[in-house]
Length: 131
Image 1 (cartoon, rainbow, N blue to C red):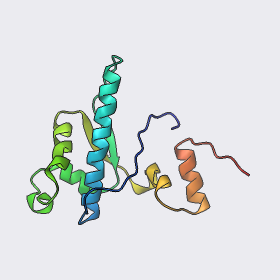
Image 2: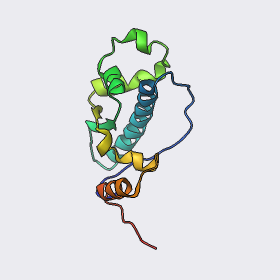
Image 3: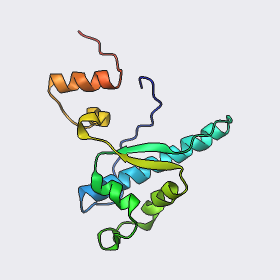
Image 4: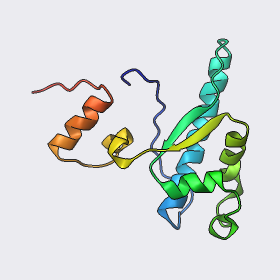
C-alpha cells in the first residue's frame, strides 16, 4: 500500500480479552506470526529482514512485551501468545508505540468524518476516486 508491503487480516479472535491491552497484545502476537512467515518467504529469495517493526497504539500492550515480569496482569493469557517476547529477544521484530493520530490501520476499522478520512487516505498514499 503506497510504498509499503502490508499483510492485513481481520478475523474473530479465539479468546475473550479482559482488557484492551490484552486484546492488543494478542493482535500483536498474531501480527508477529505473519511477519515471521513473510521473513521466511523472503529468505527463499535471499533477502534477510530482521528487526521488523510492529506498530501498536496501546502503550500497555507494548509494556507487556518489553516487561515479562508482569505476572499478575498476564498470567491468564494463553501461553502460545507469549512467543512474541521470544521474537523480540531474538531481534526478529520489535514493538513500537504509534500515536493514534498516525495509526493508519484505523482507516479500516473505524468511522471518521470526511476531513480525518482524507488525512488517513493521503497518509497511506491511497488513491481516492470521486464520483
